[in-house]
Amino acid sequence: MLLQQHLLASPFGLLAVQFHQMSNFVICIANEGYEASLITGKVYRRLPDPEAEAHGLTRVLDEDASSTDGYLYPSSFFVPVELPEKARRALAAHPLSS
Image (cartoon, rainbow, N blue to C red):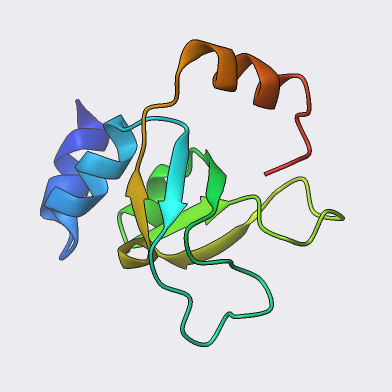
C-alpha cells in the first residue's frame, strides 16, 4: 500500500502504477537517442524497478548482453505485451536474452 501511495504521488504516478502491474515483457515503440541499444518493434524483458517507474522510467534487458541488471529508459518507449505461454517458457529458458 505504501508503494502504491508513493507511485500515485509522483508526477508519473498513473503511468508508474500501470508499468508496476503489467507483464514482464514490453515492446519497444521508440528509441530516439538509444538506437544502438534499443530496436523498435522488439520484445524486451522488463525488470521490476518501482523506484525507477515512479520517475517514468522502465528497466529492461537491452542489446547489451553483458548487463544482467538491465538499463533504464523512458517508459514512453515501451508498451506492455502479454505473450503466449509457449513464448514465455522459451524466453524463460534464456534468462539473459531479451
